[in-house]
Length: 302
Image 1 (cartoon, rainbow, N blue to C red):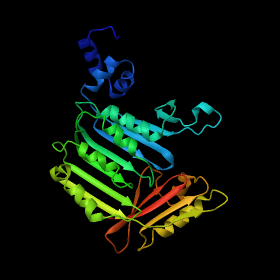
Image 2 (cartoon, rainbow, N blue to C red):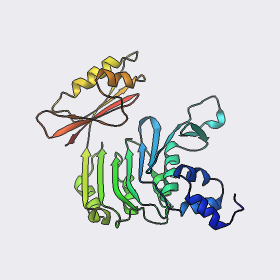
Image 3 (cartoon, rainbow, N blue to C red):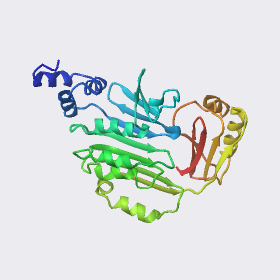
Image 4 (tube, rainbow, N blue to C red):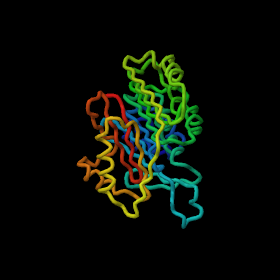
């Protein structure tokens, strides 16, 4: 295939699906160049830096959703795999040595974003981790040779300033909607932080704009139950959701929760992501997220 004329290779690549392009891109530098400059059909990208170091990248086009999962390799029986990470794409898994899940996620993001003809309908970056070194994010994003063209940008971060480095890389001319939610546990100047964002050309050019900045000082409770008691966890969370004054709550268990049973006891559908509960006598609501070892409740405006 690589011996074919360049125009024929380009024609072949143009008729591949996005999934096939990502696979063939790794075959040869010529294919890589063609793919990076071909018309992309991706519409949405969502990067999730989740708890327990299990990260996800969701790519959507008109026909399919591609899902990549990343996590640390915890197999202690293979010495050479220490310090490695695992990528899952569909039914395939690959071990990558000397890597972290976050670095691999950003690397795959760059592969898609460096396409010169890509204009996304939506780019969403969610960092749900309190402490993390995101220096590698800035390093990799600097590899992009052109501004990111996207119509809607959504940022959710708990680490001040780090994810916001993506903001100057967005093409202001294509941006229509921007939503930024920031939370931090340490003291910071909300007014100054908001002003930095509001003065950016990206913020000023967008017609729809949302900025929420929260400063949450809270205690983390560890639930020390010698067995996995889904009923007890569900009862605690359900009781907290009746409060009219709770601001932020985090529960960390010493065991792996049976998440499905917790949802069942709370009479909730077992779905990934956030559940929303309206607060009585208020224009606010609680957002609830339940993972295998952690549950989080956050109070927000409607």
